[in-house]
Image (cartoon, rainbow, N blue to C red; front, side, top):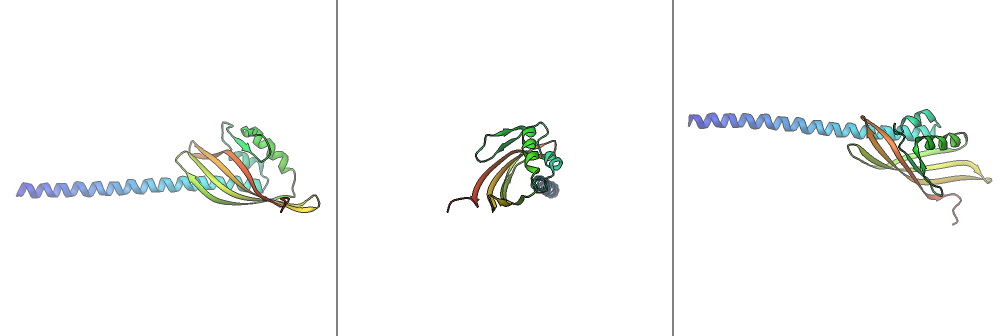
Length: 166
């Protein structure tokens, strides 16, 4: 009986320690996932804001460090590489009349790869004598490199334009 009681006490102790460690590991994993998601959203918001502000250097800081990038726009061929992406935006940013409203609709974030779906409303005060808007759904793919998230794909699809025939 004495050995049995000692055995139960040791077993209880081992189970208690194991249970505590599992809770700590679970909390650590949860914190890592939350931190990863926060970093992803921060990168997305930084990217979208830099477009709205026409801030080319901040925009470029959200781009993949090895130049990996694809820009897919309606009615045009794919623009490959960070240099092509930046060059496209440099020309577009020269026009200071447009506005760009953004909203992140949903995300799917993994450990090293994630995507975000956004709604973007692009407006010009005048195009062909009338106000112009283009409501788009834009998907972004991001890759995590050395602990940082970077944009690797931007794929825009127009859903409604002021010039659509009704």
